[in-house]
Amino acid sequence: MRSTPLLAEPPSAIVNDLAELYAIALMQAETAASRYDGLVSELTDGTEGSNDAVRDVFATLGAREWRRVEDIRLVCSTSTNKPAVASAWRSADLIASDELSDLAHSALATPYQAWAVAVRHRQRAFIFWTYVAAQATRPNIQSVCETMAREALADADQLRRERRSAWRSARAAADAEPDGRPFGELSSAALIESLLFKEVVRWAQALPATERDALLLAAGYSAAELAAAELEFPAAPDDDTLDAVRQRTIRYAEQVTMIYLDEADQAADQTGLDLAQKLASSSIARLARLRSSAFARQH
Image 1 (cartoon, one colour):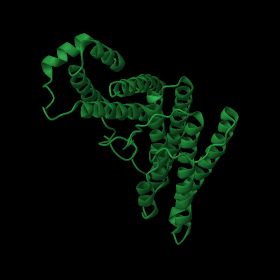
Image 2 (cartoon, one colour):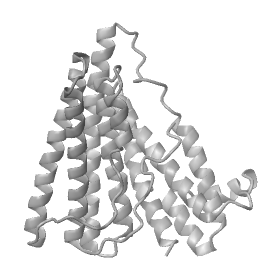
Image 3 (tube, one colour):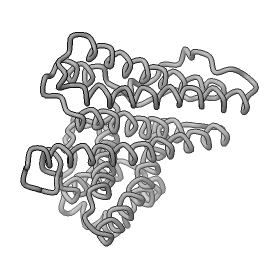
Image 4 (cartoon, rainbow, N blue to C red):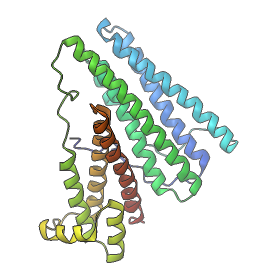
């Protein structure tokens, strides 16, 4: 289970200009490309040949990000008639430098781990753009953010396939016993769903009736479920703030969404794939609605 959210600092500012939006996207892509390239250089200088495969993965990832840079510049120019210039808007760190550093200094680094870093990068991008979309006040800004979120989600799906392929290759090379789960036990989605439900109940208890109904609709629960849960769950501690409850709600919604996406990636048959994709689609929509609810109630 992920104990912390993928995105440590969700964006709080509102983007009001399309050129600024593309500038933020450009800054993120350039940062990712530069960090991947930097790791390639570090792995090339004085690194044992055993890490050639890892270096090749990051070279591929760097090239992908530089193509994204060019695509962003092009779409910005055609959409706004302005170049995408550096933005003063503080952006989230979507590709953690400490993750790259750990791989650069590990003799046991594997292609699987390299692809996993890239998966988390694009998952963070998905989360980032859904946050910005939820806060947007202009329809064109919201539409572009939603497009970027969908692109990030599609990228993450493709990268997960590469990660899975790398895991299979490593398993075959080591002649390992197949266990159906890459590098560790998969967390229980049911457990996180129950934690999510408990936080939604606590959130709803702090709202007036009209807002409570809207929250339940966003979360996909009924008033009857809330009434039953209020008898079962203890009230939140006195020192627990509504903001903390909202943050935990979003974190659990993020976690379970990523689990369903991973389940789809690991499905062994069509039935399992169809179920996981259905759960993931529903969870993604719920996450977006909960983010919108959280932002609306903060302003």
